[in-house]
Length: 315
Image (cartoon, rainbow, N blue to C red; front, side, top):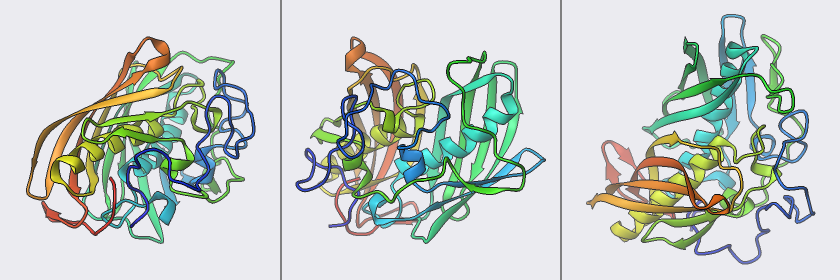
């Protein structure tokens, strides 16, 4: 079994992901109401993913993320939700600099994967395509792995929630620094649980480890939860583990309270691929609809649209 598939509950022997009451190692931590300064805090998923970024004076950036078994998908590469987190972090860093003195929040993220990211790392190049008064658009190219874009809402600056510190131009640095290798598959680390694969019901808690600078669930983690729900539902319909190869996430509201719960509707599932829509609800905020996503996934060992998957489990 290849690590990275949706689990029916947490796997035995793996440490549970942090919640509002527990840190990454089960150590009690404060609820994610306001992120510590600076962002990300000492224990955070963005640090542990080992992201590196190099900015340039012309407003572009290059970035790198290790490919590890702890972030693997059934088709043999890094799971789409982790790549979306990479894209969100890289594009968010560029957007934050371009929007100064204002702040930004991810409004929309689109990701298309054409080949598995098999390692040793994924390299990305990012550039700001448009800086408007209320929106900002960033494009991220992922080499032969895929392509992505992110749209950000431009918000007034808040002194109580600063974003990531700008990177010095030309300096390659670990995003946040001080990270540690993930001890298990990322879904288990963050506490993601598949409740009903066929219905695409997945739950995840909120804690400082996965929070953004507003104290809500970080945008890439929202995308991870959504794509895992979609892949689980598509995989159940195909009767095979499935891996997400295309993801379009629309952020309607911040995931502020938690735990979060998804539902999925399979639109089609035939041969070796399928598609589904996913809705993410904040159960702690009166089941508020926070996110809508469209997921396309391929069977773990299938071939669809020129994308060849590999044997494995989950999505």
